[in-house]
Image 1 (cartoon, helix red, strand yellow):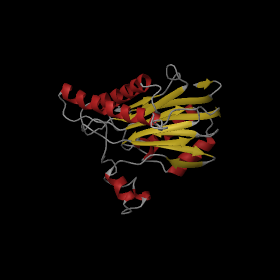
Image 2 (cartoon, helix red, strand yellow; image 1 turned 120 degrees about the horizontal axis):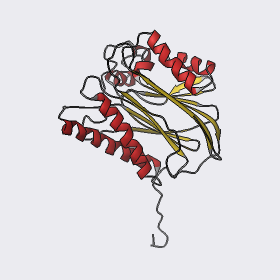
Image 3 (tube, helix red, strand yellow; image 1 turned 180 degrees about the horizontal axis):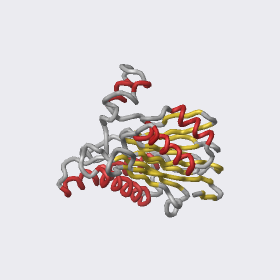
Length: 271
């Protein structure tokens, strides 16, 4: 769906499939059908409920719906502060839901993309990923919060070993497992022609980054590209749910957005 305006023109698509092995889909996606109320900003997201715990589908859907509502209610707040607050509230909501349902631990990954003008802000926990494809080059914008991700950052194993490692899916951070969780918050400048990709590990674990980049170059629309990513994951016998959210950016007029608390200066002893 394309949203034109004086500020931006962005096209979104999303797809989530149960896959070939699982009996249920514990992934959830958030694909905007309009800007957030009162603002020309967009929120897209992807959450992968933890298959090893009960009610992963509830956790993922609750995480995205809660995060979106906080983003709406907190409009006007500096974006980095809002994202951290949204993660705190979302984490607590999922944590409490597990206890109310008496299902023990219930958790999910969360990768949320908040787009304001030509600025992209990411709030990320877990091992779903956000990629940016620009001029044929792909960059992973997120870190994997997993035991294997920690090994890569410690340079104990090579990044090329991640996909085949037997402990690839063991998370070190997730929404809802504990009372507190620390998100990874990053910001990025967007350019015309960029393609943003959010995907669950059911997709990226069976595809190399450069393969995703080549497909992005050869397939024009987000909808067709997302469908092809899912099909490629199926053809490679992915053993997990497969989900993608894709955004293409066609035009920008930079939008001034509050990104941090304003500095309060003191003049002659007065605030």
